[in-house]
Length: 334
Picture 1 (cartoon, one colour):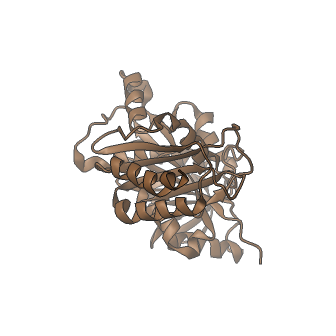
Picture 2 (cartoon, rainbow, N blue to C red):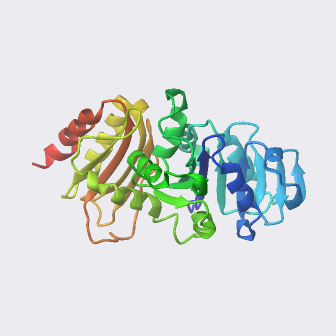
Picture 3 (cartoon, rainbow, N blue to C red):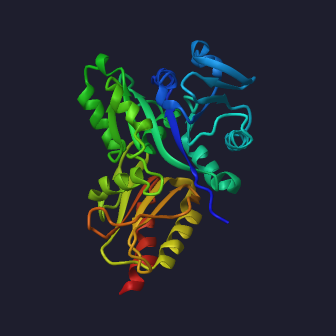
């Protein structure tokens, strides 16, 4: 039996008032949204009346652009499965990508975990990218009760800065964002086409090659052998690096033990691994206690077959992470 081609999911996050809803409203009116399913908090809050073609049921509508829009009334994973089942039954149009809008106060990590934990969802859907909208007028050093905002920034692949025309310290703000997540691509929301390309440029995000994760890893490779680059409010990042091919078994043992001992502190793990058992690079991706199924790239795009594992975490665990990697992965090689 042939494996089902998994449908890519984009998480759209952003703190309250960051412009996430405005961005989504503009996307929903775009004709390029055809064959897209969008999961939002409340359909009524977006203001879609002028875009409606038909009402499928109380919580699901079809828009002029050809995309299906529905609100979450149960668990996120159940909503994904319902969409898939209805598409297969031809109740709604077939879709080949999903955009999920999170609530303003939502930590995206639990949603990422749902895509891992529920096997009936993981076999059908995969995380493509995390996009976070950030209000450039709102300081980054908010009180600790707003730690969700920093987490949204820390785990993002792409960051869209809003209200930049009103920000008098824009460059300083960008530097602050880069300090929190210098691997993410930062885009000004006024660049409409650049923003749209995050969703519509399929070549930029081929699901097999998993390019956003590879870029994220490579851009953070300057952290090699550093014991934790301090970010904000207890968050740090670390890149584990190896020149020689590694045994896949030692990598899996390391990741399993890391998740078991420090899972609650792990915000995001991404890795590009050079293993002895294959000439093809292996991509790993995980959050907290969970790892997505590994995927293989066709080739090393930069002719630099070296292992890089980037970890963003909370707490003073950087030395523990490095020690685990050294003991389980590197030491057996000598």
